[in-house]
Image 1 (cartoon, one colour):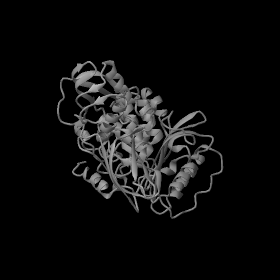
Image 2: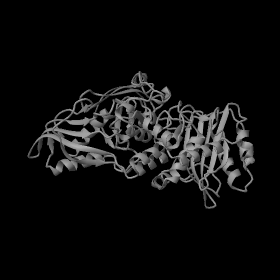
Image 3: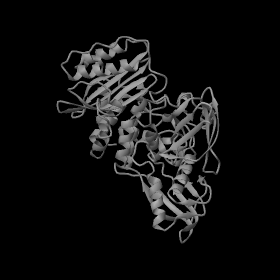
Image 4: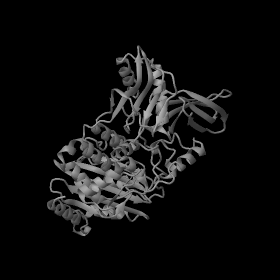
Length: 513
C-alpha cells in the first residue's frame, strides 16, 4: 500500500471517529441518541460524501457491531475484485473407458467447482446441467453407460456446518452447509400428502425433479421426518410420521450432504433423458482419477449476476459459496471467509477489531465489524472503476425490489441498499442519490431492538438528513423484540427429527477457528 493511500485512510479513520458534537446535522445525531435511550439498544451510522470522501454524519463508527447480512457486501465485493465480474464457475464433464457404438464401457465423471448456483431456485431452467450433460454425451453418440456417475470432489472437504452458527439455524433452509458440489441452494422441497386413513406420501423435489425414494411412513399426530440418501445408491430413504390431513404441504428440507443429493438428482435426470447408467453413482474425495477424456464444460452465470442474486435475495448459500470458492483446500476446512477477510484487511489496512466476519453470509452471531470499516469498503467499491458498475447493480433499489422493497424512504432520495437482519440486529448499507450527489451509508442497530423501530429510525434519519419535511414521530416504545432467528419462512420449523439436528451439530465438532 502506497504512503499516499495510507495517509488517506488514516485521515478518513480520524474523520470517522471525530466527536459527534462537531457535526453539521445535530438533529440527525439526536435521532440516534433518542433511539439509544431504549434499554439495551446500541446504534451506529455513517454517511459519507462519495465525491469528497468526507463523512457527513458519524456515530459510533469505530465500535464493533454484529452486521448480519451486511457481510454479503464485503463477500460479493471481494469475489468481484478477485475473480472479475465476468468470471464463471466451470464443471468439466468427462468420461473414462472405451466407447463402442452407443455404449460407454466406463464411467461418467463430473468435477466439482463449488458453484453455489447449480440448480438454484433463483435461476431459470434448474435442470440445465442435466440437459447439457446429455447433449455432450450425444455428441459422442453415447446413450448407455455400463459404469457409474462419479462426482469428483478432490480438493474439497466433506460438507459441514460453520461452527459459529446458532443451533437454531442448522435445520433451516437458510442455514444449509456449503460444499464442493451444491444443488438447489442445498435444500429439497418436500410436499406432504396424508389423507385420512391412507398411507402418507412425501414427494421430494430437488431442482425441479422428483428423486427416487423408498418410504417407511406412518400417520401420526405430528410430522417427524428423517431423510437419508442410501449408501452407494440412487434412492432417498424417507421414514417417520406425517400428520393426518395434509394435502401438498410444503417443507424446505436442509440437505446435510448436498453432493449425495446431487448424485441422485443427476442419475435420475439422465435416466429420464434416455441416458442409461448401469451402476450406482458415487462420490470421490480421495482417489486421483486418471484416463479422463473431457467432453466439455458446464458454465455458471457470470460473477456479476451471482453477486446480484446474492444481494437481491440475501442468499446465504450464494454468499457462503463465493467465500468458500476463494479459499484454498485447507482454508475451506475452517468454514471461515479467510481470503475475503484478508483481502479487505490488506487492501484497506483494516484491523481485526474493525473487521472480523466469521462467515461469508452474516448468519454467524459471532461476526463483528465497524461502520467505519464497512464504509471504507463501500467507498473502495465505488472508486474502483472495474468494480463500480457490477457492485452497484448488485444492490436492490429501496422501496422497489429485493429485500428492501418494503422499506420506506423519502421521495427525494434514491437508495440502493443491502439489508441485514437477525435476532438483535437490523441494518442497511449501500448508496444514496440526492440532488445529483452520491453518498454511502451504513446503519446498524444491535441489542434489544424491535425491527419495526429500527427500520423507522432509519427512515427518520434519512428524512432529517436529506429533506425539509417534518420528521415523522418516533415509533412508540414496545416490549416486542426481534423474533428468534432470521425472518424466513417457517415451513421447516418443528418438522424435523431431533436426530437430524444432532447429526448437524456433530458434523461441525472439532473444527478450529
